[in-house]
Length: 136
Image (cartoon, rainbow, N blue to C red; front, side, top):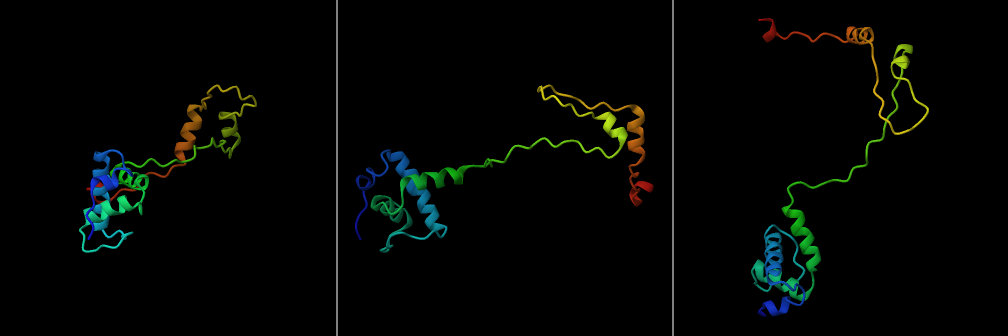
């Protein structure tokens, strides 16, 4: 059983504090069941983690990325931006309410709706059903 020293690992990770963080993270991963990249030789997880870093069987950059990912509480997902969807006009009244402009000058246009059109649209909605608790 060979002894692992900080000097064996310091050429892989230059900062000793960072070396301790990465080795402790790798030791936790080993305790959680991550596969070893070296022979255990009756060593405990922190010693195995240092030996893996010293032997360069696992890179410090990979460990650093895994450590950062494990500490993040909110992982930002890159989603495509929503495309503008043209309004669907099902009636001539709706076409009159939302006229399509042919020029694209970047100005914001708001849809105008008369009070009668709004009331006609609301009449088509079904009223909410009463539950037993509300009826009492």
